[in-house]
Structure formats: structure tokens, C-alpha cells
Amino acid sequence: KEDVYILGIETSCDETSAAVVKNGRKILSNVIASQVDWHQKFGGVVPEIASRKHVELINPVIKEAIEKAGIEWSDLDGVAVTYGPGLVGGLLVGISAAKAIAMALDIPLIPVNHLAGHIYANFLTGEKIEPPVVCLTVSGGHTDLLYFNDLSSYQILGRTRDDAAGEAFDKIARVLKLGYPGGPRIEKIAREGNEFAVDLPRPLADQDDYDFSFSGLKTAVLNYINQLKQKNQEVPIADLAASFQRAVIDILITKILKAVEEKRVKNVILSGGVAANGRFRELLKEKLNSMGVGLYYPPPILCTDNGAMIASVGYFLLKKGEVCGMDLNAVPNLRL
Ligand code: KG4
Ligand code: ZN
Image (cartoon, rainbow, N blue to C red; front, side, top):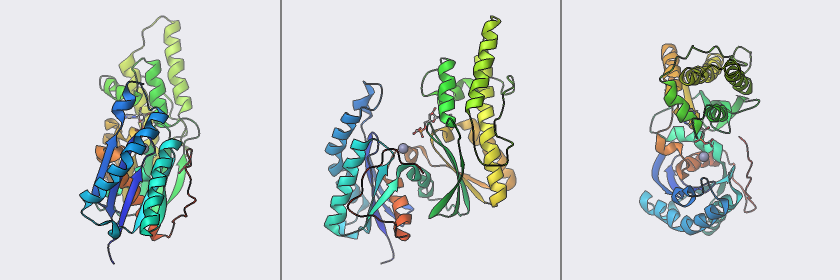
């Protein structure tokens, strides 16, 4: 049999999702049941409600994924499931369902790291992204720079030593009273400001490694605000937001370009919430274009949690024989 069909199951947070992906790159179905409405009135995800909703939704969502894919259960070659990071109650629901299916069909159970899923969402867009590839995954919890020699494995080049880039956006937005999540708010107001109005540091940018650090930048912004306050001067919010955003972007781009040159890659991929920043994409694209290097990021529907990205990782793991037994357990604080 030439084609490989993987069922992917994702229940780590507040989306119950199942998908069928062919050969790691073609989405046949991707059913996503969002629980947002149930959590909204509490101002965040309530773990116990999430677990209970996953229990209700998991079977119908999986059934719909198989039907929409137009395949039979017996066509499946493996079941891939998120086992972390995430909320333990939700993870266990997905893991249990995956075990039942793997056992009933006598096919491999494949454990997938949710963070790898977000990266592999890049390979599901139909574009032919050829390795070697450099990937920046940058969210509220992560700032990791990865190198793919081929699509089935990656090496971590560097990560943040303190705050994640998204965390820095959120903290500065809070100080400037712009609201949550901070990234989009800062991006919006920054459009009215001058990126070079406030002189801010770019920590580690010219250091000869791939590590990131954002806490010093955050402190510099706080010091700047305090100095103005002491002099009873008004904080130029748009200018400060723009200058802060530009400093973060400069740091990210410097390290990406360093990796592109040293690893001689032809393509760069992005994942995580901060990768949605329009100014970041624009400046990075400009640089990479001039070097003849491609830039890719997933469309919005594949940026949020979904089963297809889990199935895609599952395909590459299965090819390497990285499957697991029925003793698979949830790992809520799993890292890349
Ligand atoms: O990947 P993500 O949706 O969730 C996790 O962190 O797991 O990333 C959310 C982070 C938040 O810190 C948010 O402020 C940031 O991504 N973010 C942005 C933008 N949109 C979201 N940061 C900068 N510019 C944006 N447009
Ligand atoms: Zn996620």
C-alpha cells in the first residue's frame, strides 16, 4: 500500500479536534469543535469544564473526521494523539480514545508533542517546502529556533533564556494599559508611532549563538516609563509601542538570518502567535526575499489547535518507527 492515512486527535486545551491526513501533507478532513463559548464567561479555560466537554465531543468529532475524509476505518495506518503539553484532563480524554481505536483496529499508537504539531502545520498548506528549513516558533510560552535537515527530525539551535517574546508583548501591553492579549494591541497602536523614537537595547542580538533574551528589553521599557513619570512627562504610547515592537522584531530577525546563512537553508517557516505580527512578517520577508530564501507560515485555521497538525507529525514519527504502547500517559509540561 502506497498511501499512508493517519488519524490525528487533539484535546490539549479547549478544542476537541480529529483529522485524517494522507502521507503527512494532505488534509482529507479536519473537524474542530471549539468550546470557547463555554469558557468565555469565566474569562479563560476552566480545566474541569474542558475535560467534560472533551468527553462529550470526542466520539462524534472522530466519527465525523472519518466520514468527511471518505475513508473506511480499516484504511487507517495509525492513530496520532497529543500527549502534552496541555491540561491533563483533556489530554487523557484524547489519549484514551486513541488507545481504544489503535487497539480495536490493531494499528500503531503514535505519541505527538503538541508544539511539534504547531510547527508541522506549515507542511499542510499544499506548498512544497523543501528542507533544509529553519523554523522560529514564537508564542506566549516559547521562543525556539529550530533547524530541519529533513522533515522528519529537527535540532534545537537556541531558545529564550528568560521570557518568551509573546510574554514580553503581553507584559508591556499591560504596563501601557492596552489590554490582553498584548501582541495584537501593541501591533495596532504601533502603526501610529515611530519605531526609532525610543532607543531600546537588542539583548543578545550580536552574540554568536542562537539564544534569545527579552527580560532586559522589558526592564529598559519600564525604566524609560519611570523616568518620564518622575519628570511628570507624558508617555508617548504609540512611539514606545512601535520602538518596543521593532526591538523584538530586530532580535528575532537577526537570529533567523544568522541561522539561514550558517545552515545555508532555502526556506524559513514560522509558528506561534507572535508570528501573526504583520510588521514582523513584512520586515522578515523583505530580508529573505533579497537573499532568495522563501518564507512560509500556516493560514489562520491551521494556526489554532487542530487534529490535522497532529496527524502530520504522526506520519513522520511512524516513518521513523516512533510509536508507543498502551502505557502512554499525559505529560502536561512536555517541552520540544
Ligand atoms: O501561539 P499562541 O496563540 O498561544 C500560546 O502562547 O500558546 O500565542 C499567543 C501569544 C501571546 O503572547 C500574544 O500576545 C502573541 O502571541 N501575539 C502577538 C500577536 N498576536 C498574538 N504578538 C505580536 N503581534 C501579534 N500580532
Ligand atoms: Zn496550541
